[in-house]
Image (cartoon, rainbow, N blue to C red; front, side):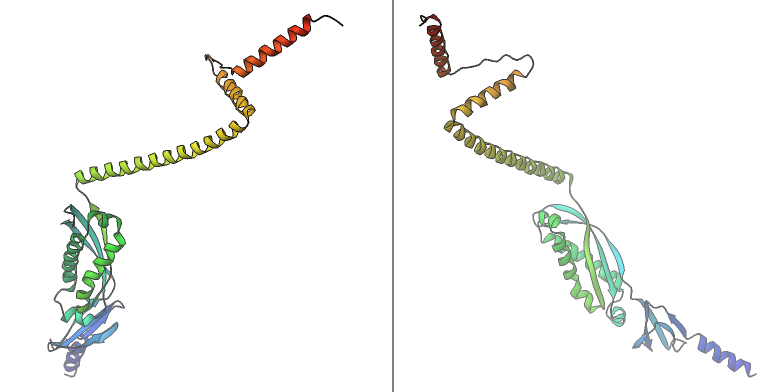
Length: 257
């Protein structure tokens, strides 16, 4: 007869035993009233419905927000994916303040994503990712704090543009590249013109250098195959050659002394 009461007591004790992992906390309610937190490790509650616990995972949770179609401030329709990282910092609030904290923070993230994208132009969304991500996190941090949650990161993962907009942006990028190429070419021509101007001034001060350069050019042109070269000899050279010829003729026919 003693075994029966002992068995009942043992059963009563065992049915109240609970175990919480290191990353879990038990929110304890007694007759519907919040009592406190239990865990990690083993703990005991009064069974038979007098006490009950809600186990909360306090690890960082990752939620991938479904693709959202939204309109930017400059009236461009885009599709955006985002990823949310959050964790429970107050287990009691996450149970008492909101019915389903995970679903609540997810819906809040979707709303915040559409609102922030709608406040910025397309160029800002594409080029200022860090700024947009920071605004996304700030937009939902206040509400989640009241629920005992902390948003660690909220970032855009992918931005999908309409095909027509992709073509326009490709044309714009091509125009920018062509503009840069023309600027580089113009700068090179300007630098070359400065060098040629300096060389011209130096040759003008030394006519011999000019003639040497001319002969060098002639030799370079003549080195090419199947080329015909027309040489323009200055009149000073012709006069000098004629005078030298007359001088040699006179010396050759002068009487011997």
